[in-house]
Length: 277
Image 1 (cartoon, rainbow, N blue to C red):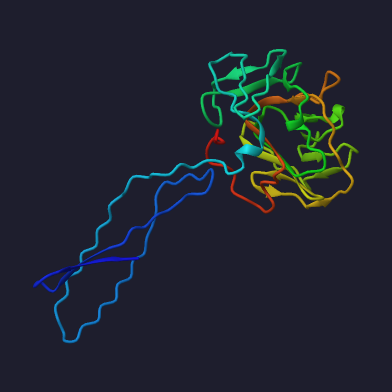
Image 2: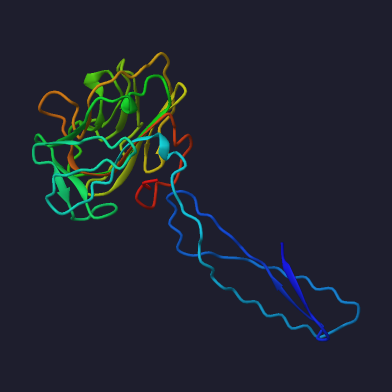
């Protein structure tokens, strides 16, 4: 509510209003626009002087992830160039194994100081079997930023396919697809991926509704019943068996959320790295 100060014997008033904004998670706020309307009523015509000023205040809150307790894997892929250390900043803190020449690149990451660099020939990461990565019949969100060097072959982003779990991958024609333990799929109608460009990708389940998302735009929702993800090793950039279908490109800010379908309608992709709390 406005705070009004009556200035005695001067027929003047100081009116102050505090405007407080709280940006949504991942928002990139570059400025704000306010429209102020003032209506004056007086008993007799008097000359009126109106001065309006704005003063920026300091923020006192913090912007975090209200679902962070449900995050079961969070890899920012940061580090020095060529590093083979990848830290899971979720509360589970999985130990990440590195295979082939998988490494951090500091060249043009999406966020932070680095991204995971994979060359499509034996490079991938893995996280061990754990209850936090076993989705069962509950909701989940698998998401990451991906930048492909090529899109002419099938490539896996996150896979539990050979362990009876859920998988997010690209088909050889460049369409994003999610696959369930029974090999049911939900797939984009047409390819929207451009090489050498960062894209936000996601795979969600909300109840029995499945969807895949590219840059915040979902496919046609698929209804699939009776699916239950089993436990097993989770792979990043690899199906989990064979020597082909490995990702050729980069992955940044990969996040797995168990029990929460973060996206149920088209959305604006995150404008900053996922929070660690």
